[in-house]
Length: 295
Image (cartoon, helix red, strand yellow):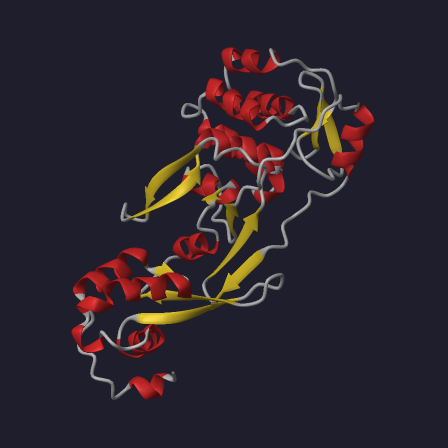
């Protein structure tokens, strides 16, 4: 039904409980909003017999509810229903309700970055897959890291923000925590500080490159647990020796011998890289890692 056709419908004030739920949710998909209206329709005496779609249009016309159009070149347009004002984090979270903020978004939440990232990153984990077996060879490592890092194409934009969905490796949400953000009113799932440092090491371009990853390790010093960091890394079961890149970052950031010894205990048997497609580079013999010359 057109909004203009709802102007003369006398439904009266919506139920207070419905308005409370809308204020708490802030951003909803159409299916969720329709379900919410259905839940409280019996309390909305003058609108009890009206169709849900009619009530939705009426709310758009007469209340703080508004439509938000979101664009994706990969998946086409999407619509969200926003009650009053909603932050970019709230809008982004509605795009992947089972996901959690990761990479530069999580790093920013933890205060690990020197800049405010324009893109919000959300990890929506894949289903569990068999772990590849067999040893990794130096030639394979060199070939993989000579290329540019693959970047997600699942990107969404709207008038005040931009979000990208990452289909990350299944981990059972390892190292993810629930945090109250934005004046403690709203809670979100966020990669914890140890998980964030692992994620940045694995995919540095989602944080601005190795220079920002080094800064994140520097800012995390005194807060991060190296034991927990290794537990998360081991739990993710990566084939590549990312602990060598972590050791390089932590040594550069001034971590103590105890932390570095824990990382060295995992062994150093291959030459590795702190990023993909590095141009001019140097080599750190302690950790056997290639790194950008300017780092």
